Amino acid sequence: MPYSTNHKTRSRERILKSAIELFSRRGFEKVSIGQIMKLARMTHGAFYAHFASKEALYQASVQETLESSRAARLVKGPLSVKHLTDLVANYWNLQELERKRAPGPESVLFNEIGNENAEIRTLFEASYLRMKKMLETRLIALSRLKKLPFEPDREIIADKSRVILASLVGAVAIAKSLPGEQERQNILNAAQRNILLMLGVDESEMEAMVGAARADF
Image (cartoon, rainbow, N blue to C red; front, side, top):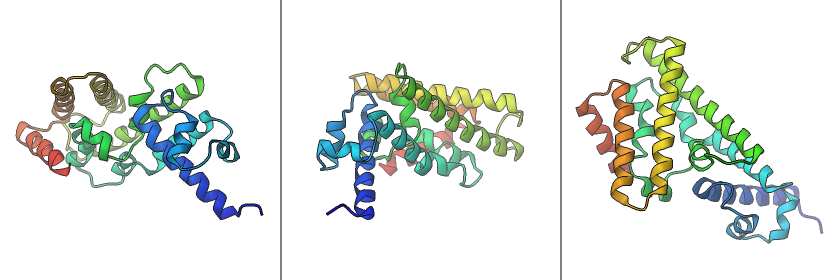
């Protein structure tokens, strides 16, 4: 008896969920189809009934992450500097992030730096541009409301967005590669503080944000 449409849909969703979990933690190169299917509790042979290749599954997982991520919801939230910096503040504890936080489009940027696979590089660029656009939209709106210490000039905003992404992604990428917990935290904290200072957050507000992030974990 052939499987029903609902069964095929559920099976595809199980594979996709497992792929998102593994790709977001380890990156494309360090995850195999066998590992994904084992986590999904399905046979290896069932994979190709749903996806043409590992690259196709990765693309679907990135697309799903982009559409459902917490970062995407930041654009729709209240117009405040605190709301904008939630993403930054929540990266202060990398170990807890790896265990508890749902992956966002930034996970693509963290994991795929330097990947030579042409399809993955294309997805990396798409994820970067999406994150940059989110930041620019938020920074322009806050600048027009005089809530940031710079004018709503598009070139200025574009550069600020580049600096935020470079600082955040670079800090996490380095921290993930270091064995020592203290230096991991020092790098993340330094990057976070520089971003918040650039956004005009004073020291007292900064401590409150960091404290709130710690309380979330």
